[in-house]
Amino acid sequence: MEVDMEAVKSRVELLGRYLSSLEELKSRKEGFYKSLVYRMAVEKLLQLSFECLLDIAQHVAAAKGHRPPESYADTITVLEDRLIPPEKADVYMRIARFRNVLVHAYVSVDRDSVFEFWMKGTEDLREMARDLVNAATDP
Image (tube, rainbow, N blue to C red; front, side, top):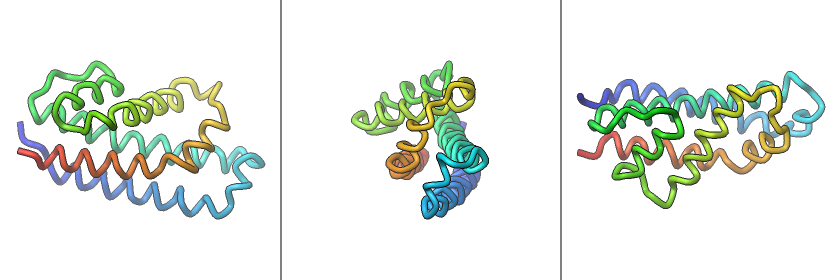
């Protein structure tokens, strides 16, 4: 199977739009703790950003002939073998796990954790996108 670079590109572009929106929202970050709607917007944009990256990761793993990942977190383990820098695997695993929290443990999501990731973690998302595109184009 070959990597579908159009699918990768479309998800990277979508990720870029989500990250731009997250950056835009930072100009009014005080609203995060005051408004449920504002907080939900941040959480959803983060979740969709994670989804874009993890969709790319799963596609690259499959296209490169690796074993099928058992979960999003396992996708990082599969890619860690040869396709992403091993020193970044823990950061990318954290992204996959945080996605699971936002999707499955939404009732008990820690607002401070979301806020912290929003303020400090978006550069990790950009780095992950670069590493996944590199993995996709690596022969």
